[in-house]
Amino acid sequence: MNFELKTLDLHTAAAHKTDALIILVSAKDKPTKSVLAQLISDARKSGDLDESPAKLLTVWQPQGVSATRVVLVSCADGSAAHVRKAVTAAVGAVKAAKPAHLTVCLADAADQRLQAAAQAVADASYVYTATKPSAKASTLKRVTLALPTAEKTNAAKPAFEWAKAQVAGVSLAKEWGNRPANHATPTHLGDVAKALGKKAGIKCQVLGPKEIEKLGMGSFAAVARGSVEPLRFIVLEYTGAAKSVAPTVLVGKGITFDTGGISLKPGPGMDEMKFDMCGAASVLGTFEALSHLKPAINVVGLIPTCENMPDGTALKPGDVITSMSGQTIEVLNTDAEGRLILCDALTYATRFKPRAVIDIATLTGACVISLGHVRSGLFSPSDELANALFAAGEASLDPCWRLPLDEEYAEGLKSNFADVANIAGREAGSITAAKFLQRFAKDYPWAHLDIAGAAWKSGAAKGSTGRPVGLLLHYLMGTAKAK
Image (cartoon, rainbow, N blue to C red; front, top):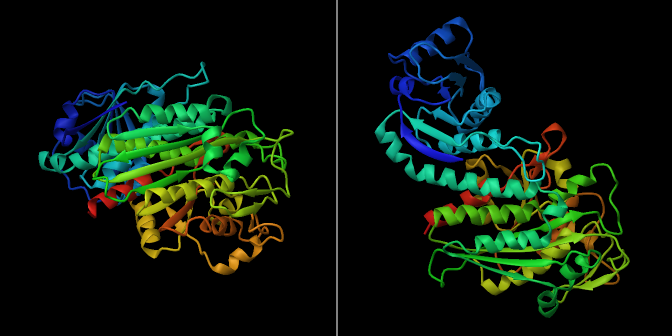
């Protein structure tokens, strides 16, 4: 899908050739004289277009307009959230017509609104086809985002480039999150990373079982023992600043399928455990976006990836394993495996002398109970880092919410047979999981994003969301602006 930025007011939009013309109508709009302005006025007067967010009216071949279909859609107060809701509804209204060229007319050039519109078009028109030959790929090839004046169009160019990069990053994360586990193995993820490593400014290294053994990543290796699929440890480095500039390190959980291991999960819904690598997918997607934007920062991506399977060699409840940090871990539940692969990656991150480390993981069902599917869980002992990530989530419409890390929550992780147990009780499960990870992240500012509720949808809309690429990209671009 190719995006373009163009200047179109309501008068010139009427003559613009496109398969579908979406006009965002805001309560703040000032009346003008044109065919489309009259159409909007008449629709409002008749009561067919009120100011409710995403309220729409579709008109087929209106007189004096070149577009085959015109969709008038209310974006209420014009906020980014209302723009996203409006564009999503409008694209849904014309999707069945299979447009090849779609045009969206916005009233102003605010960065968040432009980015929200672009992402909404991409999300609403996405079709998964990789393992579904019967699926009809999206016909949408060209998307025009239009602003009413040349001044606004010129001002919007940086935001437009950002929007395109974010769409590319979210699309990559979403695509690999959706692929079934036999089409998205650790080896496959390594290949995706290698492809990213061929882009300017990005280097990639993919380590296998022998290298992991030499590094002493005993915790990571233990999780992979029960699978015939070999583990991979992916190291991506984006260099956009001087090598002396400390990088931000992103650590993505990459369990490409999670049976729970010996602590086997219930059968219903287990197919969705292919989404347990969405943290890894978000890191890959963020690097895709960085390759487009080329900001003057340094970023490292670390992805420990493997399967969690229950064969005769698999990790058992009660086993004690030794992490890369030297800390021993009593495994009370093999379904708490994400933290076991992340802890070694967090130790590995120390070698980069990072300015900050952020791990991203579909870690706990408890986080879904706490926050549902709206916000990701945010944990950090650093107010500065937590505040920056929270602000990035709000700006990108990819929100998170900070939860506590009081030391008392770590009491349940005490073990009689190792330095730490991998789980505590049922209470505050997402917090105790974060407390486990915090033990391995004391050498740098650290934050943990639990995306278990945000990374995918179930039911009729089952599929990856591509989150939190938007949040991560906004955070990283914010660090570039701060320099």
